[in-house]
Image (cartoon, rainbow, N blue to C red):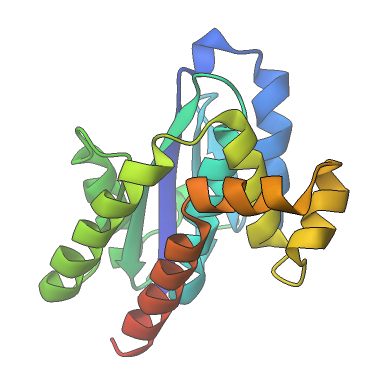
Length: 199
């Protein structure tokens, strides 16, 4: 089983692409090479292949990267399934993972993060958790997004090291992580991984 993330940038027209495009590419590159594992198409849409257990962290990293820019966000659909046809371009590969990701993306209406797998009970439970997590994520300021992104990319950093990185105090970091829901997001990632490994 693999995971395919399909996404597009919200309010991409209102911001200079060179600002957010390089940031997006930097995150996608952590998961593989272009255009086999990821690609950007139609200017502000993208697709990324990851292991199923890595998909949610990748989605949250992408969100935190884009939300660093004022008034910007990203819609993300995660599809789990098989890959039955491999092309050198991810956008031309196929299988149930791609179909689930595409259908999930087309169904995104008011929400900006959802998952579709071959397992309905799993989807119902995890999508409810995503909706609850978005209550916090949707309210990230650019500063919160930057902090959450750095904390996710450097799990080894202590709050003191994060404070040094951002040239601020440890108590500001502590408040920022709390405001951004970092502990709850970490628990969600842990729970998601455990559930995926049981599928």
